[in-house]
Length: 75
Image (cartoon, rainbow, N blue to C red; front, side, top):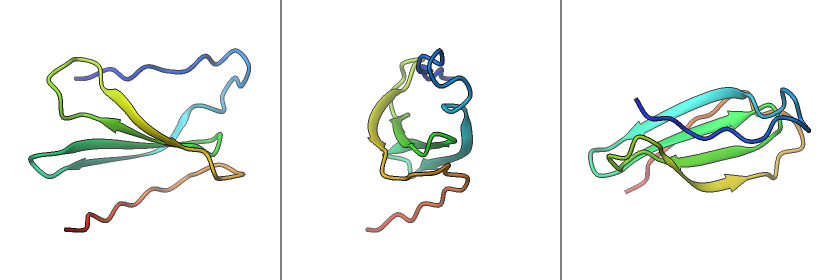
């Protein structure tokens, strides 16, 4: 199982906790989407054989908590 690095929680105690996860695997590309109570949605690359996934993108446009994720793959 892979480990994903957690941010420093000293300033925002529980705000970085994950509220929703979505795992997408299409064979060629594996991604993990993580939403959190701080309003950020993070995209991690899970397609490598490394134990630790790498963060690809962080969206921080929400002003409130993100509690649900859905993903639609377009060809």
